[in-house]
Image (tube, rainbow, N blue to C red; front, side):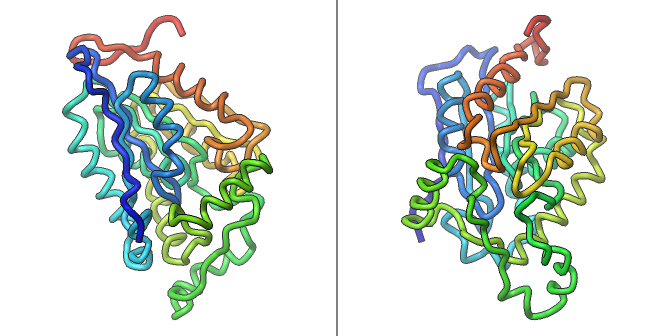
Length: 281
């Protein structure tokens, strides 16, 4: 077990009552808030209060990974949203991988979200490193295999930049910040969540920004395009990266990702009880 690696970055100074803004972050499958820390620090410097918590069965609770369901992840995220939302008049959601799918799920069930930033959204497991054995998942889940077999993490750790890849490998080996495999039960939960999200995307009406790599090793741009085609949002944008893999917050285009997110979130300003889009970007 490790100490909790959840984090809350809150400005101590009193913010303008009409301009209190925050973002709730969600990490990836078998990951932890650790992978969102640099992103969160960047958003904090941009003036946002930032919150990020480990999903059930993740972070310092990986012993529970075989017992949790996708509904547990969603209920956990909704509880955190309900706890925080009333304190801010601007409230964004952002997630990576599984976290992006969870953010979309909340967008389907809550109408007071300022905007969603979906990074490397994983609604399909069709990236170039996904093993062909994924097609056997429905059969494996019906046998005792579901408790013993795991899909191994590929050697690239979702990062194209070799130097960063080596650093992540060392950090993962030294601390329980993430798992180096994908338990069958966990993958099944992601696929069931993704199916549910795809079915209800039309219920999302808030502004949406999707950033995805053309060469994502876990999930192709098909996932991001499904989001953009499915939501009912009037404001929706898609940025496709060409020099990154799945972990776009750490790869070659991380600065572009941060800058794009900052500009997107900065487009919205308080207007009484509502938030409106600035006329100029």
